[in-house]
Image 1 (cartoon, rainbow, N blue to C red):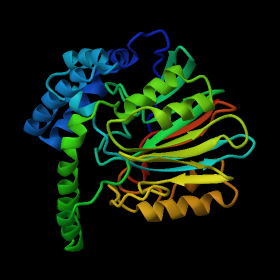
Image 2 (cartoon, rainbow, N blue to C red; image 1 turned 180 degrees about the vertical axis):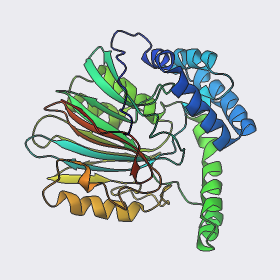
Image 3 (cartoon, rainbow, N blue to C red; image 1 turned 90 degrees about the vertical axis):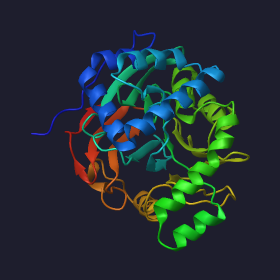
Length: 338
């Protein structure tokens, strides 16, 4: 039998991510070791030093929490991993009487599906559920019952000429690496919030859909992002696209979809994960008909070799259905909460 997704109640914790690491030390260290192998010990050590300097220079509101996580790990990596923004995703929003969200997270880091957790947390605006991993202070997928649910997707990287040539020659990895490195100086100079950290602040402080939308649309960011948001009332659903110099809000009427490409921003770039256009088209077709009440919709290309999490959320009812994945295979039993 597949394992269950554990739930760790952090509602009384002032630093919930640090408490999550202490509650699940084996999961935390396993994820750290996977990341260390994936990025190499030297690579993650260098990235960790730079990330720590950047967070402290910018006065990041979550830096003290990351300091505590770093102190509890066997080696460097906490700062770099808490600034990692590498996931590709597919999201479908329905804006009917009870808005809902279908969410699939794709990330090349193996083991995330097996280590998936749910963390009930609480902030000034109320209680909410963080669907993620111990040791990560940001938020990538969350449900705040009777307020909203939200998720984040990786946007395209602006393309440089040499990167376009590499992709044309079939060297996609080289093209992505060139574009990623070319974007680092601007990221280093920026004083805005990391997108996943903004998501955490939204969950803690936004009282309703309108407040969450305003924060996701207007808060200065250190990097581009594609946010998806659903509320509790008919019509309360939108995709918020944030590029470095422009933004757009795509209202769900009656549906909206987000993958890893811009829809309303004229900013050339290439999606950072595979099948973005195909995933977008498949989710659009899915939302055009009756949406299954179970995970039978989770088929390729929406589910693919990088999938680590699948969720169905309805803020009006507080309904959550969650599944941990490694590629197209489920590695946990479905978790149902309402």
